[in-house]
Length: 500
Image 1: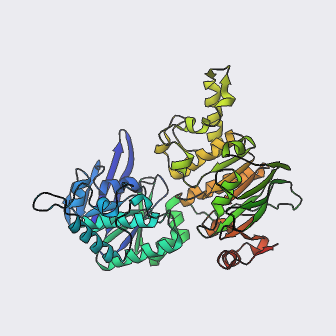
Image 2 (image 1 turned 90 degrees about the horizontal axis):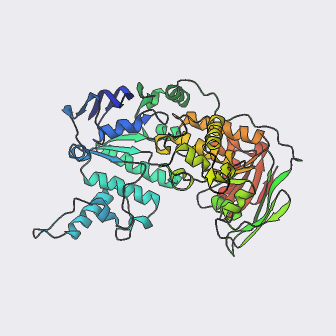
Image 3 (image 1 turned 180 degrees about the vertical axis):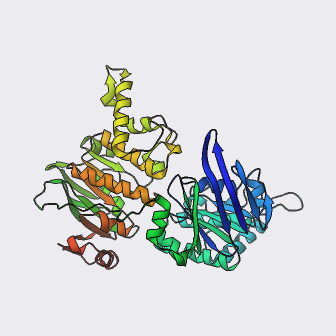
């Protein structure tokens, strides 16, 4: 149904795609894999007419096509759902689905009934039920995802590109999305599926095409490969173990953070935990279990009924994260782009933004030379891959953006870092680098609280794990008890005990 041959793309003198081939059949889910920066998004922008290739051909149903813009690709039956939604939050689902192509009556008036009926018809086709009359901004992320897919199908898309559609979905929402994808596959729709979660590839996809550094590597059937082989094709080498060895943390190690009690709501459970010097303390549990809220409450960024905290033995109550930062506690938020970075700023500006006091010369001036030197040292320490400190954040891969956030806090000389979903949206090679940086940080005597929805990450990186359920900690496990069965039993049944 879709065939790309020898696709090349250059931006000025720099060629970013070097003759890529891709063939997608009708009625299949075709995975497009590669590290951040491999060229996946650029290739899909070419497919959807947002970018034009420098060389190469595009064929749809065997006919060669050239798309001058996105509208021409839509006319050819190609729809794309980007990771960053293109929905208007104050419009409802129907208004978003038919934005700029509203149905009209014979008198030229908006035919709201026809648009609503068409929207309901498409959602029934997807077996999705969601409120059509509320602003889209009040819907869940999963519901917004389905509106995006319905919007593409309303354009009569027969080739559907899904770019990281599961990045912010819960497991149950992912399963519903896969049910929708299987139904579309039965209806003959060709789906290009981009994901960093390799387990999803084996669950939903039929074939896989791998890109590396803008080059076509291979296409294979899912049944004929495995995770190790895919990782080797993506990164050009085998990654035997993404997780660094765990050090031995002495029980006598100093307690740097002692949360004696925290209660998120008046009638909720009362929790407590300790963070030792040099350890990674994992926060695990189902979505909505209170993991992130507890960490934010500790920093004064989330309203809590009770919060009693000791930092290095001194009782403290933070009114906001700025006070926590003054005590050497930094936060790497779940959403890098919305909360952790200013993507239109340079690397230098993002690393310096909390640190200008250290570069001050007198009352009015900044020591620009010292700022640049410190930024370059921080970039080198965390191994940021970029042209230099002046490169804009939105030109970097997800992994390198995360490294910039880490560099900022290292530059601020933090002693405790709270990582919320540290590797979300990051490819397997970059994940290994982030994990190594985390262990390097703790090896220097610092400590980490890691909040993660990925159970293998929790198990592979944590020295101890606090398991959350219904707004509080129900168990703390360590050693051999850090395993999927133990953690999920506590997370789902709420059995309360410490396991050592």
